[in-house]
Image (cartoon, rainbow, N blue to C red):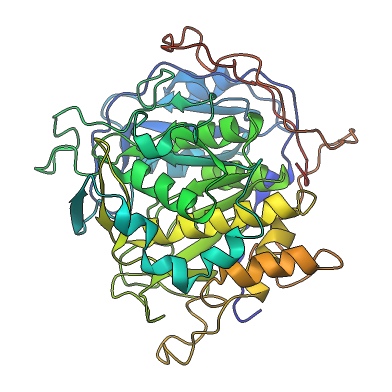
Length: 480
């Protein structure tokens, strides 16, 4: 490989317990009170994980620090959301709690947003005309006609964790899974619409409405027969927190997703996202994330997690986008400038950013997965890496800081079609992303689960019946 993603210790994953636990979705989260700032977080919330070896209870932790329990975090074993005492700086409190041997980790409940939300990048409304979507430069650049003559991605589910999707968009008819969820409003209608309010206090209202719809459209540009699982984790101003994002990742895994697209992130590293991404990858799900739009080497999370594929952006000439992040932690490049795709209100338009680059890779992974359902995420990512176009000559100042090169969808699909065996090296996913072990058990692979129950205790009704949702966790499952 030309680049290697720097490993961070994955203590939480190494001791992960695989259980068939209840999916607990606590009350709809309160609106964040700090946003649009480096190291932004919910000022009164923490995420902590008990150390099972210490035998402490969350009640004992609360008694020590004056915290109160909001609730357990999904079926992540021993993980809780806590309220900090009134007036307590959660960063100071979390730093203190992190030294407590009874806890494996403690950190603020960090906020995440799309790279395009801070600052808001250029978005051009294209009206109701789908023609540029059908003739977009990326189709030729990536060889989509050739790739789609071999596979269209049938049978593969791509979970898009974003602002939701515009559910009634004509281009999404028949393309969405019945299993879907809005983790912001705690209901089963993850619709990509605004509320007319400036929820984050930045002077703009609903600045990223359409983002999730746009991302979903890019996935379908590459893999038109794949199905999108829309999971809303960001509000219409583009703000979500680690607690709901981690639960949504878990939800996607439990309900049959094969690929997860995360066009969101910030510079704050958190153990709960590391654990969630690690669990998903170990369960056989490819996790793809945007590397950020700061034109910096600063790592963005979850993209920089060892178990995720970090995607940066290039233009139509394979030159690094002026906004795109770079560094040894970046895995691969993809077109991300003036990408024409779906928008809200049945519309179309162009948007630029690494959020647009990531779903091209998610769609590519879906095509490979449709041909090779027994390949695990490492092998799928290796096919992407092996067939990437070398763009170092186009970007002499960046060397290997743009990853393995620019994706070539046609070449990767042809490779997957003809490969005598699965690739065993060159994976974009770090070798440090290891399979979690459960003491005293021998896990066995589990097929994609059948939905069984809804995530909330009393979810809002859907306009039409849809399958209930699986609450169980199945680990490890390298092939799904």
